[in-house]
Length: 428
Image (cartoon, rainbow, N blue to C red; front, side, top):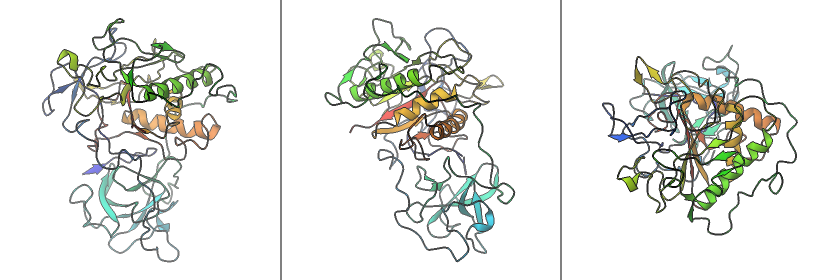
């Protein structure tokens, strides 16, 4: 069993998101996916089904508290002249290993080869104490991923508690077998960074809530600077019954949209429109669609105003409403995820928005499509470097809450995020 190496992502084991609308394909749990954009199908608006295990039930352990703490119980030191598992590296020869478990530098983080193929995902029998075995796409044999509870980690701790490379991890391909360069999302936005884009100026409202923070409310106003809460999935302009959200989550989303509207005003890439807001919860906290006896999301998601589906910022489209940003059909069969590069994605504005969402320490997770996530992660790294996001932001330094799957590793994020991203915010 293999896992995808999300070169620039901090993985979290959280449930995914969407549902409602068409006949489920074989092998799913019968949940359905609603049409994302109420006005036609530009380009690739779609419906689909939720596979077993996607989005349902309580999130796996460790998700509410964010990424695991690194290096809480450091393992045995590496022999002199070598680097312990979890250490930053450039070359395979730098990493500690044994005759059964050779050292290897995986995208800039020391690991070991497994002694045999992994008996199961996360098995321990093929690895030294303190590491667990997973395969990796494109790599023959298994790898021993160091546990963050056993070793200090110079990368990021993923949802399994393993040390993985982060957006700052680098290596030298000439001496590291498992080393590739991160993708380039395109020319970075020109500076300087506007100094007037701060809370209390340029129409930017504070994201911090002080009263009635857990109340379920409608967006106020429905359409504001940088965003539009438009009717979809059977709603009308006078009955947006799927669009109730906690007040504190509303304030955070509104703030992020206003920051993008202010900071990116002179950017020429993308369509420049407001970001589209999708399903939230019903007025009583139920899953959207419950009123019509057709819940549009699996149990445990989109309840009590903690979650929201939001359209990607896009390029080559008329607006930024929820729609597919990529090709997702192979031989006439919908794959429910990007099968090609997300050509309609405005990675820069999307990354800027997601970066500003990290202003709140209660941000739990943001789930995006795998191919979109790679581009967004690269853009986020550059925005942090260039000062569009403060260096102190939780979005910078490889510790962010954006998660995705390039291949299906059964984390629940692989499908149904090619037409929107999903945010989840915990109660304080």
